[in-house]
Amino acid sequence: MPLILPSNSISAGGYDVANSLRFNGGSSDYLNRTNVASPTNQFKWTFSFWVKLSDITDAQGSGNQMILSDFTDASNRGTIFFEADDTLVISDRVSGSFTHKYITNRLFRDVSAWYHIVVNHDRTLASPATKVFVNGVQETSFGTSTDPSQNGTSYFNKGGQGSLVGKYGGGSEYYNGYLSEAVWIDGQVLDADQFGEFDEDSPTIWKPKDVSGLTFGTNGFYLDFENSGSLGADVSGNGNNFTVNNLTSIDQSTDTCTNNFCTNNSIAPDTTGSDTHAFSNGNLVITTASNGWWNTFGTIGITTGKWYYEYLTTGSGSVDQMVGFVKSNFYRGSNAGIDVAGCYSLYAGSAGNGTLFTNSATGVDMGTSWAWTFDDIVMVAIDASSGKIWYGKNGTWFGSGNPATGANEAQTVISADLDYGLLPAFSGYHSGATALMNFGSPSFAISSGNSDGNGFGQFEYQPPSGYLALCTKNLATDG
Image 1 (cartoon, helix red, strand yellow):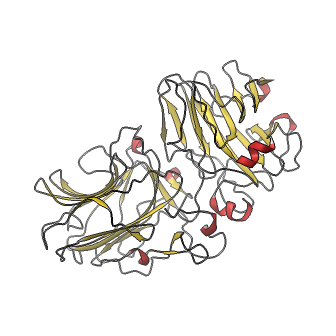
Image 2 (image 1 turned 180 degrees about the horizontal axis):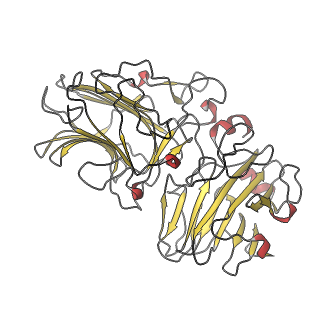
Image 3 (image 1 turned 180 degrees about the vertical axis):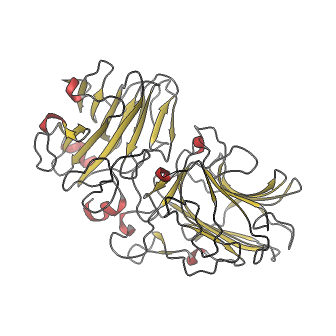
């Protein structure tokens, strides 16, 4: 599967996608509009979109991951969505019967990278009426591939009908994840090469290209999500704008198909304890339904370079959370946190003290001055060349540390673990405490907008000189 990797992160030159929109099913996020009365050609259309999946385990209970729903009623609708079993489904239901349905055999389970999907349809043909492309390659393996009758009734691209992005029109099935470069072409059947191309230096890597010159058709739209005050704005020139529901400017993200940011890996092995935690907001927020340890790890690993991230705890009661890094093959395997061999963490304990765990189950009590509480923003910096790690909060580094000069580090990683690679890592215990991560594309509001030295990321505090956000553009030059 081609992925968006450092080799095509377009750190200089090339077509760049500035923004995506982060959908959260638990917040009932979606966009909606009414199709124009007379589409250019209802029977010919193309839908191109980039997605970075998040909560595919459906911990938020929203069911299928709905991308598009052209909806009249439950018996008459066209839908494109990720099924609960992680397949992609394209279906048209007419008078209560599925007259058109394609279901991929391919499973979509990668929560660390962006997928590009193109679905085109020509109902004037007998068969095949539908083609699906994934990262530039046409999909040929389907568990179901039912073509509609030639020139038969369809609820896709239907004039005057409601159209929703991120929600099923007849229920509470939403999308959890990022969406970028969403393009609907009315009246043309286009293949994936009209929306993307293989990188000339890394020919297995698929990347987007400028679509602004395409002919969109009367009912067509192009959502680039660049206007934070009008996230549903259509920039195709048609003015087919969407109404925004429950999405705000904080849901506009710089995590895109040309600059992929670190998030949490919601499908990585966790603990065998009784914890019931859930991922939300693009895998950047973790909540706990009942007391019990959880662990989670970042989607981008570190072997070289200097990196910075921030962490926020909200709620009430006791914090009982850990932040830091773990060896990339780490698996706790018990109801506990990141506080054993292979772990480098700072623990804000229930007693209000801070404890450092450095590749050992035996911690060093650093006292209350090294702890944090609710609404504090924790700062974490790592210099992989020296293996040094620093922690701080609210703009001040603990222990008079100075990552920029390399002075007074909190921990030093053993070389064997660093050679193997480290992952950002987090643990928590109490149900009253919610964890929010910021690797540069924050899920929570910040009062300032500090980017790193390369101009990427948005942080509450200025990253130390030379320290960067964990994203693929930075990995391309400094990783």
